Every structure is written in structure tokens, then in C-alpha cells.
Image 1: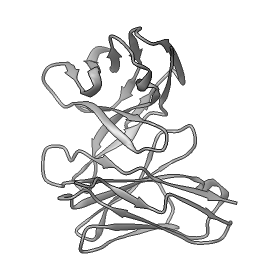
Image 2 (image 1 turned 60 degrees about the vertical axis):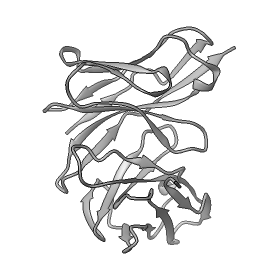
Image 3 (image 1 turned 30 degrees about the vertical axis):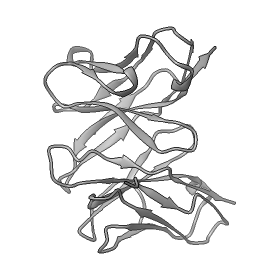
Image 4 (image 1 turned 180 degrees about the horizontal axis):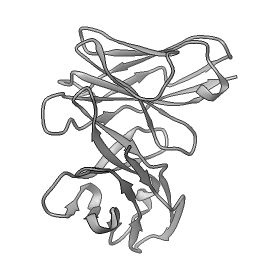
Length: 116
Length: 114
């Protein structure tokens, strides 16, 4: 069965600093990988996704992620963090289910705290 | 264009009661999935509905059931509530056809079981 590990429960950065959130996955086939962001009181918003091709994926809000098959990782990065980036970030791996749809399995999330 | 909407926003129930949560999908979407997100955890897949039938199910007991209506909206029902059912319940909608059915999430219903 597929699984996702986000080793950092909390990450604290200063506004303007760079950011990297770690994600490791376990999946037997070619993974479909995602990063979602969740702000308080809101649902999950898709930041970016990887299906195939270029291993460096660009997303919304200036985020990018790099797929490294050899390390089973899909880390999320941003060169300069804004205070509005403070939120909960979830990595997910999508697996094809019996019903013919891809169902994401989520990690437990990393809470990003941004200091002014 | 309205996104995914859920009602109610918050709900308080007592153990043993039953609850119904509602979801309206994003315009143009025909598939609805439900997730349970416990405090400090990532969302866990409960089940998915398409063409008014349950198509896929996660590791949840039969106390969790659902329904999809002809207009694609959906309900999640939980019977015999337990304290451990306290969580944020998220609905996500998608369009079934395509390589990957990108899911759009609603804001959730916060259920508290006392």
C-alpha cells in the first residue's frame, strides 16, 4: 500500500527566507504526487502535481517541487517566503483505485510558521 | 463559478447519535469523494461516489454511508457516533474522465462528538 511521510511537523522561517518542505513516499508503481496547502477554515488547495516528464514541477504561488525517484522524495520549495504562506502543507501520492479513479493518500502535514 | 460547498460548517452531536453532512460539487463535476481529517492528521479517504453509486471505499466501518443525488450533490451519513468520529469532514469533487481526476476540496464540516 502507498504511504507518505512528512518528517517535519513544524517548520519556522523568517519572511523572505527560502523554504524546503520534505516529503518521502512509498509506492510500487510510477507515483502521481501532489502538494496541497490548507489555510485555517479552508479546504485543501492544490499547489502542484507530478505525473511524468520533467522532474522539476512549477506550481502556483511561486512554489516548485522536485521528484527524485532514487530517493523516493518530492520536496516542496519556495525561494522567498511571504507571511501569507503560513499554513498547513500536505504531500500526497495518488494510486489508482478499484473504481478507476486516483485516490490521494496524504501525509500528516507540515505546519509552516512565518516570522516577520 | 461556485466551488465545492459544504453544510453545515460546524456540528455538535452526542455519542450514539446520527449525523448527515452535505456537499455540492463544483459546477461541471460529476464525482464526489469524502475525507475525514482528524486533528493534526492528513485527510483520510472515506469513499467516492459516481453515477449515484459508491465506487471506491477506504478503511472505514459500515457506520459511514453515503448517497449521491442526480444533481451530483452528495451526503455523508454517520450512525452510532463515537468520540473518535470528531474531525473535519472534507468533500472533494472531480470530473471523472481524464488521466487524473483532479479533486477540488470544500472548506469542510467540523463535527464534534461529546
